[in-house]
Image (tube, rainbow, N blue to C red; front, side, top):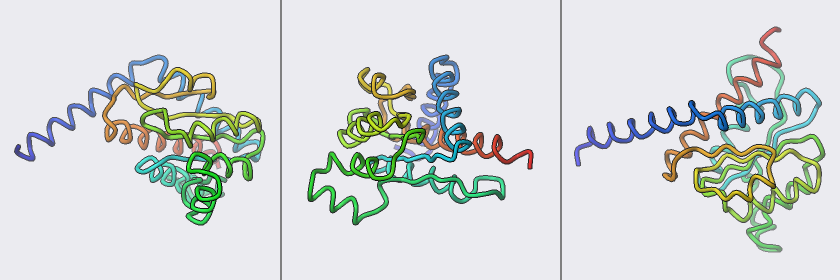
Amino acid sequence: MKIETLFDGVMQDHQSILRDIRSSADSIDGFSAISEMALTAFRNGNKLLLCGNGGSAADAQHIACELVGRFYLERKALDAEALNVNTSSLTAIGNDYSIERIFARQVEAKGKAGDVLIGLTTSGTSKNIIAAFESAKRLGLKNVCFTGEKAPAALDTLCEAVIRVPSSCTPRIQEVHILLGHILCEYVEKELFAER
């Protein structure tokens, strides 16, 4: 296969997914709801917690750092934390409890009513993300899931909003997740700080 052929095929696939998500009322409404939840949390002195596995862990960390640092504007830091970055916590909880509890246990320690938990899972079936949502729901956090098209309907009972990227291809799903994360960061930053 020529690299040009691969390049063109991936770009076409990506554009098709973006076209589908842009024309989906459910996606637009869901993302609007997520953005307002995050904005409300920050306005009320609450925080965003994020979690994911593998590439989704990197995306969670990426989104958190854009909020704590800055996106476009020089402004006050926003409280956001990726729960997958503390290796001591992850390994201790994984060893003492199970890998399924690595995020839930941290939500129990750090989360409070009014906070927002964003779980990134391309499959929608990651047991440690589901357990985190269950703990967050009990504590009064708002749950948000970024996932793929095959994610189970059960997520809708655990989460206030679910964004299902219309693809079953993990790389394409993750590409859209980080794009959505960037849009979220830009929206929150502009709403909170642009007028200043």
